[in-house]
Amino acid sequence: MKERILTILEDFGVERRSVTDNVHFVKDLGFDSLDTVDLMMKLEKEFGLRIPDEDYHKLSTLNKLMVYLEEEQSVMYEAA
Image (cartoon, rainbow, N blue to C red; front, side):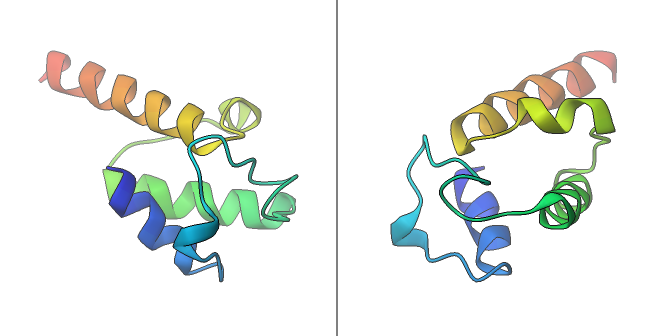
């Protein structure tokens, strides 16, 4: 999962070596609101899920994003 996210982040010009689990998308990587929306859309497409707009603010670091995606995928598999 982390590799897939890192590949998406590269689309934004982010170098893999600058990304740690606690990297903050806005504070450390300089993402603005449009970047955040674009990132969420790419993640939705990559992982086949829907991320509600109200959850965006919760996903401020790579670690928080990975935990969220793992939980969402777990729920999807349980429902199937």
